[in-house]
Length: 142
Image (cartoon, rainbow, N blue to C red; front, top):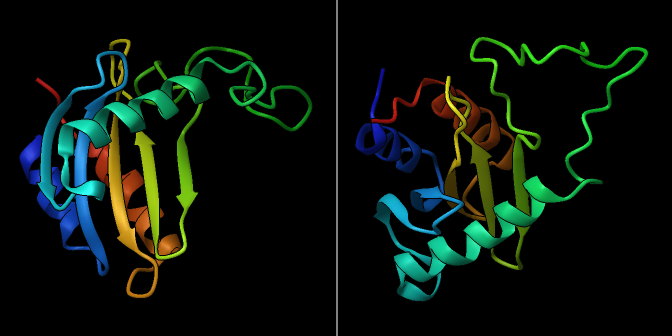
C-alpha cells in the first residue's frame, strides 16, 4: 500500500500530469506535492483547492447521496472503510487544463483529498479520473 510520496509519483506518471498534491481540506495545508502548481505556489494552491473541497462537502445540495429506490443503501457502510465522504470527486475545467480533486476514504474521519493538475491537450480526463480513484483507494496515510 503506497504512502503519500509514492501515490503522488504514481499520479505524475499519468499522461499530461502537470502537478499533484495531497491536501488536508480543514487546514488547507499540502501534506505532499510533486510537479508544478498553478501560479507556482504549492501552498496557495492547496489553500484554494481546500476551500473548494470544504464548500463541496459541506453543501447540502452537492453532498446528497441519492439514497432511495435504486440508490445506495441507507446504512453508513460506504464500502470497505465505512467513512465514505459525501462527495467523491470534483472536476474543474479551465481553457488549458483540468483540476481533479479526489477525496480519500479512510477508516477514520478523513479530511484529505488528492489534487491532480492535468494538461487538457495531453491528458485523458476519463482515464485520469479512474486512476486517481484507484490511487486514492490504496493511499495509506500516517
